[in-house]
Image (cartoon, rainbow, N blue to C red; front, side):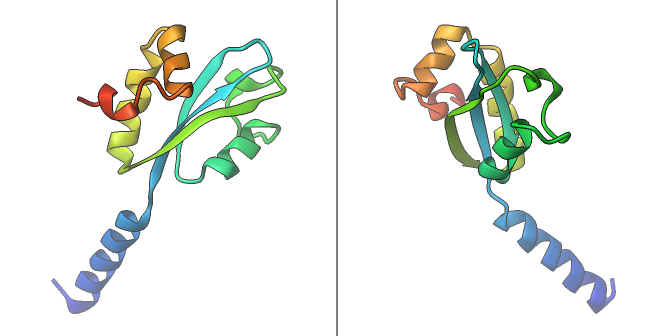
Length: 108
């Protein structure tokens, strides 16, 4: 492997380590909770509020409110947590929003 390629792979690995993934819950006008993952919660929330890049599910369901967000680290962890949250009941999701259920508990 060439020195240049090794340097490029190291740079890519460092860039991936620097990215911090988060999971978030958005509350719609009808009190539904939408779960997603991102590296930038504020940007992603703005996208959901009216950008074509926002989730189709949320279109026309505003006003939207960011109900909860937590940095979780790696993309894999964020996606696993998103999957687990999406399988919860509404009451359990509300427990996350109210901080009576932690995301770490869901990952055990």
